[in-house]
Length: 281
Ligand SMILES: C[S@@+](CC[C@H](N)C(=O)[O-])C[C@H]1O[C@@H](n2cnc3c(N)ncnc32)[C@H](O)[C@@H]1O
Image 1 (cartoon, rainbow, N blue to C red):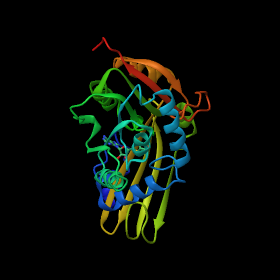
Image 2 (image 1 turned 90 degrees about the vertical axis):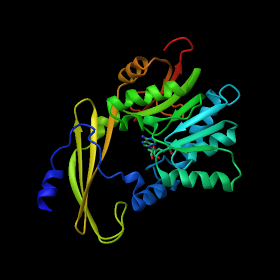
Image 3 (image 1 turned 30 degrees about the horizontal axis):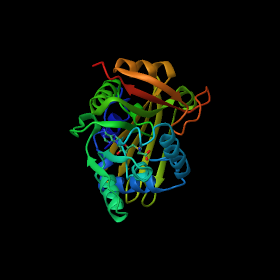
Image 4 (image 1 turned 135 degrees about the vertical axis):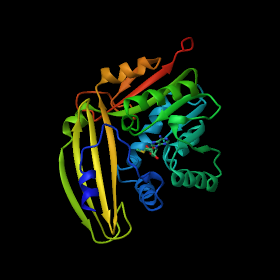
């Protein structure tokens, strides 16, 4: 076990993927779902009052009368999709978490709502449909490597109608500058987020070049040792605009968040609204 641990303590390559697919782990995905559904926790989803503000702002600037079909990528258990549907959009949600999609489907069914849900990886998205508006909310974009960001923007471009819009958010340099490097450990005598039984979590936060941060969790329980990586790229406004334009999008506006607050040097996030040009690509 010591050799294994020593290996896991070596710094991973930039955007090295976690071997264990924790979003589909039976126990961890249950904790993740709980985190999404907690209205007062900015964890897997933002707090509910922000979500409400965000949806009403999106409805105001991109009304369903002009953008009837909406695709929400990384929709989780459907906190946004149901609200979008209530605004009058024809909504499709995609997430690769089986548990989130199962919850979202059941919730829509119980409320007699018509929302199309697909359990798919948005890097290999294949919906055979084109949308007026695509959203990807809560800084998922920066969790992807530069190569995967190009892929997801390509997939989105392909799934948008000409003149269609894309709205997404990323963490800003304010977030990067405030990110504290360090190492800590925690002993859980009983169930915690990562395991159902007694376990230890070794935590490492570090900054990489190119405004990338890594949060690593090494979880030790019984004879089991697993490492999980949470990567994040933070952006300047200029860098975000450059990536969007390189993918063929036209930049419509930049905001401080997906609730329409203005962007300034204190904003922890940047939200960007893009348009697929009718006549290019
Ligand atoms: C930070 S959460 C945000 C969820 C939701 N947008 C919200 O704000 O409530 C990111 C979501 O994206 C999903 N996700 C991450 N990578 C994905 C991928 N490659 N394909 C599909 N879904 C993905 C996760 O399962 C998770 O539900």
